[in-house]
Image 1: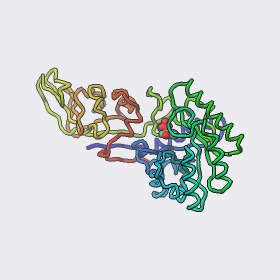
Image 2: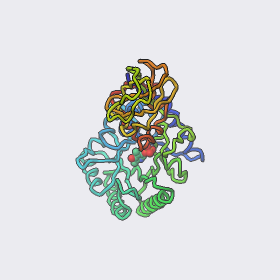
Image 3: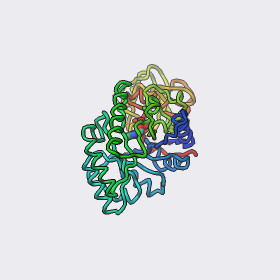
Image 4: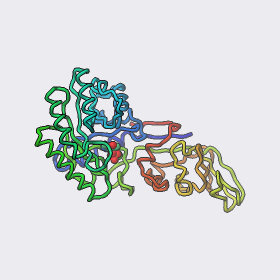
Length: 368
Ligand SMILES: *Cc1c(COP(=O)(O)O)cnc(C)c1O
């Protein structure tokens, strides 16, 4: 009834595209594939296994629970987790060889404790807030954190694998200011004698926009899934191929007279005698309710706007006099239909939100 096709060969293609892009100047820049939030709705384990097989250098997740799930499933690639609860168990992270981001003195203290109880040094990446004002230590507090970190290294409790930050993608001026602050952070670390194997700053957008800021590693999330990090539907220009296709089958069709109200609130009334097709996908599947009246779907190679209200489980399309019958294929977005970007525009959001919020009632089929 509802099918989500995930083309893992396209994930491999996108990884390769990003790899070629960052290594085009002859530099050896590592790639972290970001698989947080169930790989942006694409299936965390399947994507992680694919990129591991393709030789990705690092895997990135938001929290430790995601990292543990990957380790439990047998993923061996280096993993970094960066968003921690004050109760998170760093000892377990150390035991499972999960790198942790350290954003504050308090986190460093907890990591040190965990390392001494585990009897193994923690692998850490210092997270610097260069201007997103989210996670990370501010530049003002960085020096103290670096001094404490150096002491922890000397005690054998931590190993400083990386130092990193994240851009706000507000505009070129703002991003360049952040890059400058990141440079300050690197200088500060160098002066204090704290060494890092990996300096990393850019996610997909920064990687495509600022070749000067690739440093030792880039973190690719949305690009891995074949979507543009910019709100302009330009993924194909970068050589990226979308991975997810959401489709369903028409479950009922009916002829109705002119003037019939359709779906909740009668946003739409039939202007003439026509055929209505019922599709079993609603906002529970991640088709945003506020895309009602704006989003298009593709049935038998023809695009139709969803003019009536999208409900929880279903929506109705006026297909006029087209010969459409139950069982016909409806592409919500992806291969052979509108793009995730088109749907995002209709719903006044970004492609990230469309794929990440895809519902659990789709049957997932993996290619590759
Ligand atoms: C989510 C995330 C990424 C990946 O971002 P994309 O825009 O999807 O490439 C990279 N770094 C951090 C810190 C993130 O939270």
